[in-house]
Length: 519
Image (cartoon, rainbow, N blue to C red; front, side, top):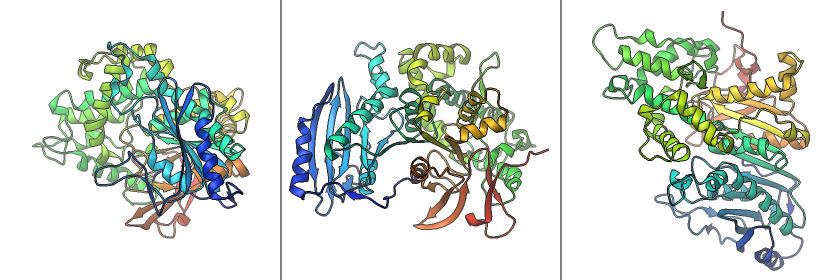
């Protein structure tokens, strides 16, 4: 799991001094807890014997979500339709509350993560974001017009309501609130994470934000730019009738892999890569190992920023090195982004990305819903004022959300903090509370050719509670249950740099350093 955040904490204390019967009764009594605009729909003590299959979570092949520790399960609905659940250990509670982000248009409680977190001693909350299912038509009223309530719930309100109400339930159950509260999420969950820091800065002490979809209007346009580059004219298709992606990836690796000092099939720092698509131009007949002129142009567009006709940047392109995962963009994310513009922006089911005008349509999206769905504010002063710490992370091989977007946002935070300072001072000022970790080889939130397992939440807890800033985060690649590779994740702009000796699959052979400029 890319979040890599699930660890029991030493020093956990029993939740209750009284016996099981008293604790169970105290849990059941939460059914009568009064919370503003809220109806408690379930308050039940669960004591697995030996496991508890959570009702309603049955899934084909995988079976239901199961829990193997005793916990108090509370569910509620905040008016008009925000459903949430908070699970609290009946045994040892580590004193912390964690709020969970969820992805895409998803309207579902994150039962898997609830089960993992409560098993590791956390009180934990999740919400369905104010609607059920992942159909983008949640954004419409029955008459087909824009439903600002449901979109606002999805974009930010539901997470805030879940957080506030869950923490009140926790305090009522234990007789005291959590000593620290954390939020963790990736993709849309990463958007929700940054939204908490920007809109609701007092909710959490620490936030773990992965692959942040924080610039929705422009992110969706960037994904549709990929579609326009490869899916409108059949001559530009890189996957059919011949799949060119393996050859493109091999060419990128050949051109750039050794630049980081280690030839391992992974680009440690794609910012150093100078691969030119034209180098793959066919010299004769078309084949799977070369690119036709329209395909060269398409590939150049994918790596480049999406721009308006006047040259203004809309969203950054994809990084070199992640080409093998691009089919998930063309087959899944382009239709997803098209539905975003169809239903959330224009309320026109017939709208097509093939005729999208980047200049006009992106500006219209920003005007209509940017204030609801975008979270790009670089001023995190209020979040940091109470000691809030923020860790961002992003996989360099992410095929869905450009990793450059996380760098772009982080750079705006640095610039906002600069004032009269120089860049080095502004970076130091920013890193006192906010650090970004770029993860070589990792795809969208997890997976890929390199390390994708790490203790992000543990690093955040140490920073918030002990003042130990993450100078690096240990990461591993696990294959068949065994560690195949380890590397340090380094705070941007540093990268893991090979020391010149030792195994290149061992983190001890690397140190974090700012890369030398290529000249």
